[in-house]
Length: 216
Image 1 (cartoon, helix red, strand yellow):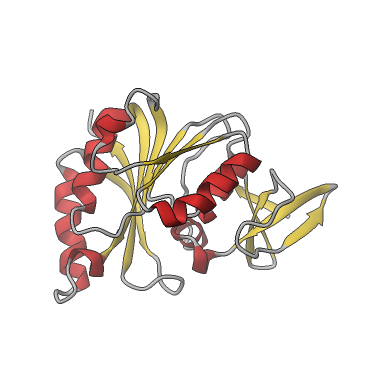
Image 2: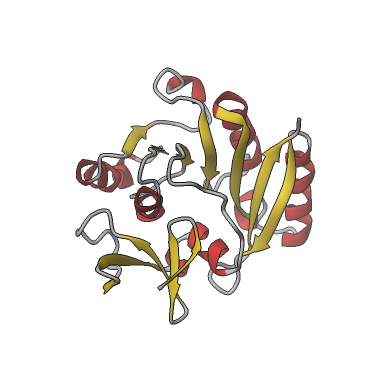
């Protein structure tokens, strides 16, 4: 079991995180190695996992606090929870249907703080979320770059890291995906420096993943 990034491991071509809970979240497998238990991180089920498989370094540390926008039922949130041994995941989800799964997950893990709210309105949860080390967003909306910037301006530390998963078809269902990606880059560069990027194939189609730092 080789640690390829902080808290992220690889063995036989598969990704793993140390299991902070014995409960399965999305049918993933568990293995024991070096006297510890690890959970498989399935890249086809997670944009972040796909980015890691495509060799993007997240830059997340075990002590970080992460604001997660578009948390859904908590598949990827659970892996952040594994990695953040001394940090918290502040997880925002708009759909009350999938939020139930996120809430159940938070009941099993002390470092997940769930919010049923609209990421377009960060003022709704600004009194409950501190300045964070990482903002990650996975929201399939036409204005996803603007939502991300708004939250980063309010919550991301000046030396923090932004992680953004862009779904081209959510922004435009007819235009060329590369043109959509370039327009997103232009908007993002108004506020951020793009440190690294990767497209998420073969795990996700028509997705771009950006790693960002605030302009100083």
